Length: 117
Length: 117
DNA sequence: TCATTAAATTGCCACATAGCAATATGGAAA
DNA sequence: TTTCCATATTGCTATGTGGCAATTTAATGA
Picture (cartoon, rainbow over the protein chains, first blue to last red):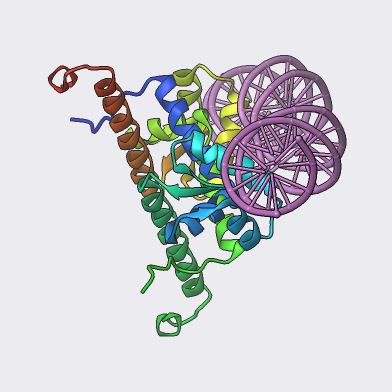
């Protein structure tokens, strides 16, 4: 018998695509990476990334709309945090692949495996 | 001690972002989904997706550039196949999350869990 | 109330890209 | 070769969006 993948409606596929699209921006990934370590305020991220406040705010809005980060007011400021651990696994998968690619490429160029550790 | 995520250069982050970006299009996801089941020619995909040949070809080019699919000439036609199993895991993760969200949303609307199976 | 700080929003511009139509390329068959 | 089929490429338009500057909103404090 053939190994069929589960059926998916165009709408479902579109939803998955939107999720990946949100992750497909370097600034947003950098934000998520910081939030992996700890919750942060907007200004903290603005300073760490040396970016404009308006842009960070916009990216945070998209991450929040996608349900990846939570938002909590604390007096004058807003604290963001990762609320979807799946994101971590996703990035992990891609990073592992890239690392394997890099090692393979090094091998192809004749570098000994021992030199890669 | 704090749980620090591994350091990543801006270039590395950019590379990861590009990978997600390639996955962030419904047509490309639909292509990958078909290829999960079996290798296919371009026309087979064009017919199945009811799309223009030029577009499918362009998307296949992007998937190939990203190292996600392999390309093999067979006489008159070209056969594409998934060459990066990680893609399957990525989609799996997102799909699981979406499904969980849907179930949760149903619960929020008062639907009994038994009705969801 | 007014001033200050933090965050979000808006308007703008530049750029990337998805889809379409038309054309070019490449291989197989007559 | 010439013809035909499969695939790739190009030119085009419309749309989405990332970044910047300026403004607005929200909460705090004087």
